[in-house]
Length: 154
Image (cartoon, rainbow, N blue to C red; front, side, top):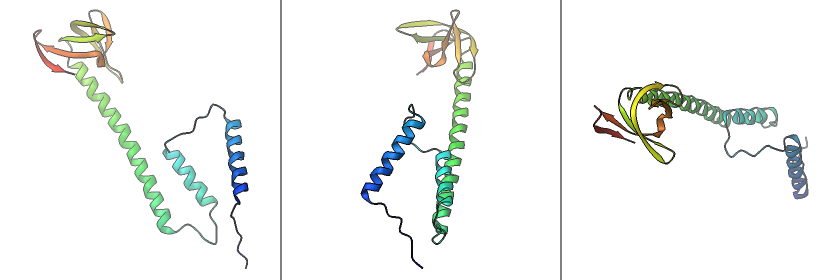
């Protein structure tokens, strides 16, 4: 039985690359190439690999298991990143809440503002109400205890 050769000449490679480039730019001209692959990209590549593999030379078990392990690791890392983001938001919200009733110093554009925290809005981007104005928590540079000593600097 004759084996089928699937080797492209250099001219054919150039033509194929040009075709792919033209197709992608016509399909979505505003599309920018990504530098990082996400889990969806990884899964698409794996499915494409399986769909177009040569039946006379299937993917080695070791390769397939290694790719599935990489996918599993990617899934776990994605989950951990989401969990860390939630934890960070919780900690920042708790820190902002602990400033309630204390005097703070914050930077608003180029001026320094001092006053007592009258209220706190929690969420992804906590805000504090100082002197009747809401400020983002990340603008606070100092929190004072008992209206006198500095206890924390950021």
